[in-house]
Length: 230
Image (cartoon, rainbow, N blue to C red; front, side, top):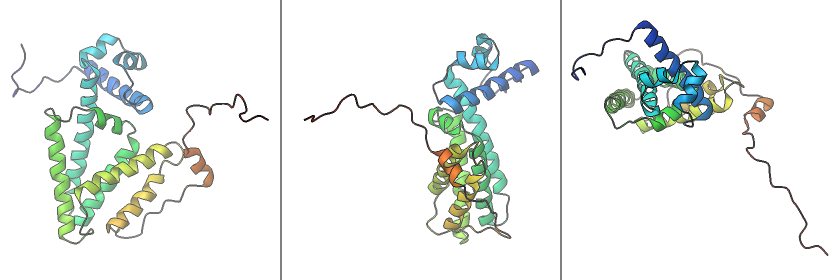
């Protein structure tokens, strides 16, 4: 019998929960490498479990992506709640921005998960709105107390994370801490100054920068003849 909506779901058995976590971690790796072009069958093969095991936990790929989204927004909500405990509004906002940036830098599947989650369906929509309210409060308090430039807005929080994510994704495995340098530059631009000695992350070397250049996906077409021959 299906439980009533208000009744808590019974926790999974230990082995079932292990399989669920294995499937989710495997999906993250594949999504980070291939984007949304993954299938539950491919996830099952990579995880070393039967296809039926995957389908028992997640009836389709959308359900799996939504579970990954819920996990991530739970983390962002926790970070925002922790940041809100700081007495100083500027430190609260700075703390959230840096903690969220670190999470984004380490999570290469995040962009794909956000792009494909069913964000208008409950309970995801509720989590999205809860996070929005918490971020709005952090921004409002920082602006009101003059801890950040007066035109700073919640949209800047999300743009900040997009920019840091782009740097982190491109420098992953080459200069994994490079994002911190650019995060600090942006925070200073917002008017958020660090208390105490400033963090220092060196600029990338020329060799590292060259390694971040995108690799060609196709070769240029070869010239098969000359035009305008005499």
